[in-house]
Length: 219
Image (cartoon, rainbow, N blue to C red; front, side):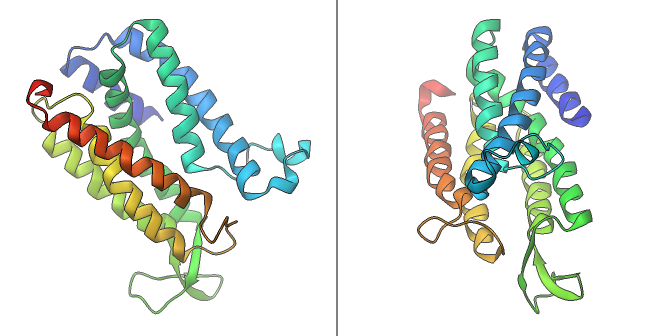
């Protein structure tokens, strides 16, 4: 979180955003993002436990990535609107910091093998409880390293508003959709995990930002 906030501050200063106004929204994004991430994980992956206060109030347990994206994003939307921060530019600043912080998040997932996958002979497989498996946290860490490097290099000069969202959404959706087929113990609906269903919304959103940026007036 600290590294992500540091990146947000650098972005705000570099591209002329009012950092005080942006920072005023950070607390709301973090609290609502984490709480919403946990509650949506319980609701979608363990719905039978949703009315069990021991599970719902146990914030040491599972979190949903997309739940955090949605709830944190909504909190940012409201906070930026109330604080007078230009929405697309504020969200882009937030997402830039989030991607950097996500590196540490997925590193943590990998360090304790939070997301074991199917058994494999793939050379990137990891021994988990005596079985060589796909480690989905490790794979997402590798993806995030590449994504962060691409964003870092390609934003050395100012691009159109929403550029970071375009890159992140259009790349993350297909990667996450494919990786979820390797998961074990995940709840599915009509054969797909909740995250895979969310990818159907994430990808078009990214394409919208790409199309926006290709319009001459957006540059």
